[in-house]
Image (tube, rainbow, N blue to C red; front, top):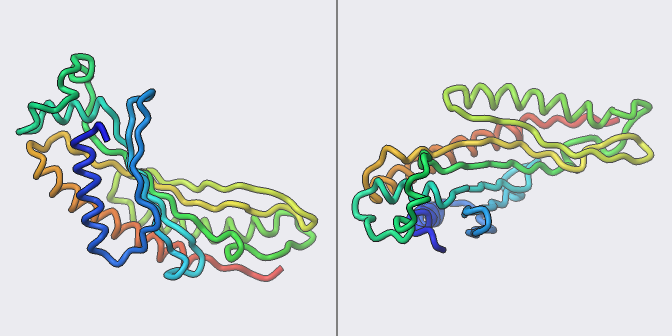
Length: 216
């Protein structure tokens, strides 16, 4: 990876996750040179620990401009290769890591198997527990500057409409522009990752307990 600082952050995240009882089934970095971006994809299996969720995905997004801006600020990074680019270091960007969390639900257990004379019965039943979950999640995250939304996909059969995908998405940000050394960055990432996983686990419990499926 051509992002030394971000790679060190990835290593810190990997080390932290290895110390926890978390079933990580995917841990993969990526780079897209045509858009000057890089990232980390993490997938955690929830099948054995929940009744209604299958996975939690955590996606970290970064880019060359943020890498260069942070390298230009941190102590001990004078030989960073991106500091050779005037275009990168003159860009006015705030170094922050964008994070997307996605809770993936088991659509089979989250809605009735069949509908009634009302074509929207299954979707209506799902929307009721989703509304309950949203209220509790928003209460949990009220002190955080976080955007949360639902993503659903709909199909139909002889019984009417039903959901083929149910995902809850939240967007966080790790602001690291005020830090002065790579050690400070690693310490900050460790603390914020602990906070992130705590909130993620609380939301897993809220979502799992919110699902109520009534028979048609």
